[in-house]
Amino acid sequence: MASTSQIEINFNAIENNIEFLKSQFKEGVIISAVIKGNAYGHGTDIMVPSLERVGVNHFSLYSSPEAKIALEYKKSGSTILIMGFVYPEDYEWVIANNIEFYIYEISVLEYAISIAKKTNKKAIVHLDIETGMNRTGLSLNDLKKVIKIILKNREYLIIKGVTSHLAGAESIANNSRVTKQLATFKKRVKLLNNNEIKPEITHIACSAAAINYPNSQFDLIRTGILVYGYWPTKETFINFIHKYKTREDKLRRIMRWKTTVMSIKKVKEGEFVGYGLGYQAQKNIIIMIIPVGYANGYSRSLSNNGHVLVKESRAQIIGTVNMNMTICDITEIPNIKIGDEVVLIGRQGENEISFASFAEMNNSLNYEILARLPDNIDRVLA
Ligand SMILES: *Cc1c(COP(=O)(O)O)cnc(C)c1O
Image (cartoon, rainbow, N blue to C red; front, side, top):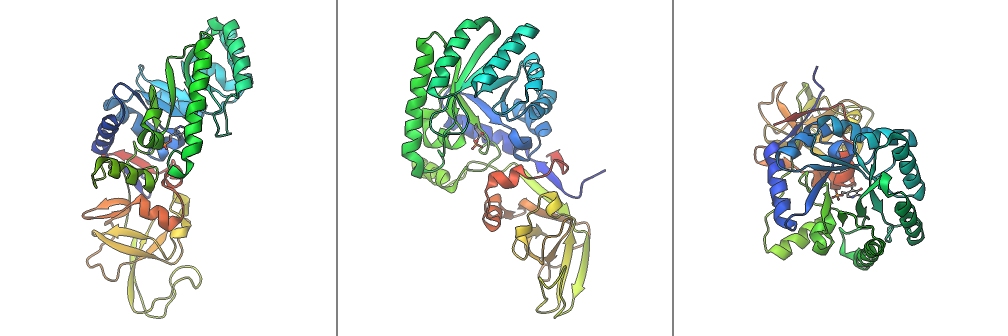
C-alpha cells in the first residue's frame, strides 16, 4: 500500500554532495554523516546504505532507537555514535553492539563502567566537553574527576574520542564565542593528553564550522545538513562563494517530495473555497485537490500562501492547508488531469520549490521542516 505522497531520494545527488564535502574538508578527515531525526527526514533505511556506497562509514545520531535502525541497515564495518541521551537500561544493548556514545555527565561514565564490568565488554566512549555552549558536556571540574575515574578503570573503557559542540558557527555574529570555545577545547584535550589519556579522534565541527572555521576540522566532522544538499545558513553559503570566487551552488538537494492530483473542480466567482471564509473566488476559477495536509508534515502556515508545481508550473495554495488535503488554484495552467504528478518540494522541469523558499514562507528553518517530515511517507531511492 502506498502513502499519499512520496519522498524521492536521488542517489546521484548524494554522491555529488559527498564529493563536494571531500573537496572542502582536509585530507583524511573522517566524515560522520549526522542521521538524527530519521536522517533529517530523508529516511535512515535509505540514507545509510546509500552513504556507505559513496564511502561514508561513520554515522552520528541521538538515541538508542535511532541507533537500532541504523544498526539494522549499516554494514558491519561502519561506526554508530550516539551524541545524546540513552536510558540506563539501554546501555547494555549499546555496549554489546559496539555502539559508541558520549560521556556528558560523570554519572553516565560510572554507569558505563558498571555495565562493562558486569558484561565483560568494553564501553567505547567519547568525552563530551563543555566549552561554552552551556548545554551538555563535562566542566573542567567534572573532567578532572573523570580523568581519575578513567585511570582507575582503563580495562573497561576505550576512550575513542573527545568532543564538543560549537554554539553558532553558522554566523559571524558568534565569532568571539566560537573562537573562545575552540581555545578552551584545545586546552581540555591537552589536559587529557597530559594525563596519558589520548583519544584517537578529536572532533568539534558541524557543517557550518567545517566551512567557516576550517581549523575546527580536527580528525572528524559531524556533518548533517550539507549531506542533504542544504547550506546551514545563507551566510555560510555567501561566505563560501566569496572565498572561492564562484556563484555556483555545488550542493544538490537530494530530496524530492511529490504527490498526485486527486480531484479537479470549477468554482464560480464569489464562492468560498474550503473551510470557512478563508478564500473567496474573485472570478471563475479551476482548482485541484492534493492528498497532503498537515498530518503529512505539510505546514499549515502555507495556507493561502505556498505553491506547488504541476505541469512544470507554479500553482498557488488557496484556503487553509487541511489535515489531509490541500487546494490549489490551477486556472492558468492548462491540461491538468487527475493522477498528474504534483511536486511539493524539489524540481519539476525547469521550476523548483526550494526548501529555502518554503522555509521563508514558513518562518522556520530547513532543519525543522526536514526533521518534521513524518516517518510514514514512503521513501524511494531514485
Ligand atoms: C545536529 C548536530 C550536528 C550536525 O549539524 P549540521 O549543522 O547539520 O551539520 C553536529 N553535531 C551535533 C552535536 C549535532 O547535534
